Amino acid sequence: MELLRFTVRNQKLSGGKVKIVSDSIDYVEASFDFRTEDWEGLSKWAHFMKDDTIYDINLVEDKITRDMHLNLEAGEWEVKLHGTDSDGTMRITTGTAYVVIESYGNLSGEMPLPEIPLSATEQIDAKSQKALENSEKAIEIANEGATSAGEAIDIANAIKEAAERGDFNGEKGDIGITPNIQIGNVETLKPGENAAASIGGTPERPILNLGLPKGDKGDMGTTAYESAVLGGYDGTEEEFYKHLNYSGEMLDEIAKDIEAIEKDIADLKYFPIEILSFTNDAGTKENGDEVWNLMLSYSLNKAAEDLILDGESRGSTEGNTTGWIISQSGGAQGEPIATATRTYTLEAVDERGTTAKKTTTINFYDGIYYGCTEEPAAVDSAFILSLTKKLSGGK
Image (cartoon, rainbow, N blue to C red; front, side, top):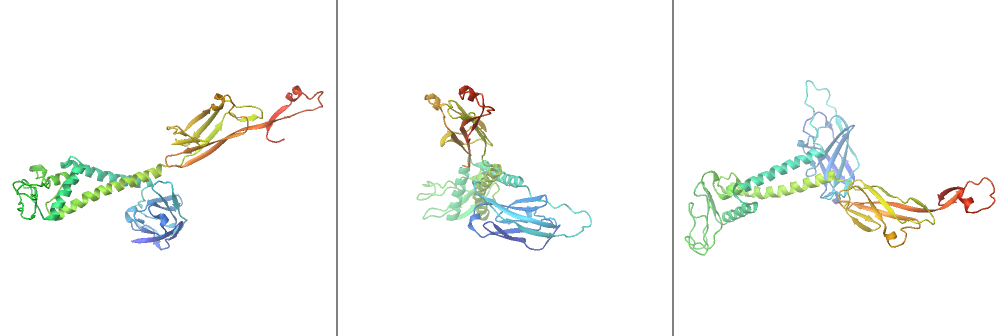
């Protein structure tokens, strides 16, 4: 029962204003009606917050069901949402809605503590476990009697075609599963005969073999199909289609689970790249000086997929978060690297294309000389060099 109903339009969250009483266990459910297209295809999370307690719940089909344990204690709860796209580069957040939970009062005897929702990491782990179980089941049934998953699917498709064209008749042991098919003047095959239909020939000399293998005796069960795919087929047409549909749906479900899990894990682990520092060892120079050798040093919060210095790619940092770029190109050509103020721009790009930028500058200033206490006998180089010197961009 969806006691809580919310409406979402862009970043506006509204609803939730109903009377709910505390101390119910696994009873409250919630639904979220997204009225704008910007939320389509996003992974959506609801956050219920009160004091130091926070419940983070990954919505399933825009709902919170009882098995997600939304057991709220008495008081006022803040409710917010956020959603992220498959790349984790776009995120939508909402404003706050409020839910007030009325106190049930004193309870007599001992009551179990409310079970709280799993953490974000635990919810992803639960999905991962489900996908793992499905994957192990697929491997198990494929290994039962087929050399590959492709062979198992080929067997399934062959038997499905036979069942659609005639009466599907399955028996155990030597007989195996044999479709009764009548095509033109070709004799209908009977249980116990070769499990291959003759088309355009005679039963003794078939021209086309449908590829329906005979079942092995003993532990192999009823058919090679059962051994390869079903793992427990009773020979009825209804059961056949049930297992056939399950096999295909299971493979689709495994692929969807893995894709969702990989996205959730990547979203949780991802943080954008930052350039923590970018410096040069030249510092401040006096006008008239020359810079012949230069070291540019950087520090990142994680390794970069690409470093770009003044628009020129320098490649990946190969797992390193600190390093330097040494420029001696000017000196190598017989000219200084810098004789006037110059700014270098460094860009760092991470695995999702997020870019951080930082600059460092070599400043060239005039030398300002001061500290004369009396009129000198002569204003010459020796006098000026005896004064206090400071580099400055102004007087």
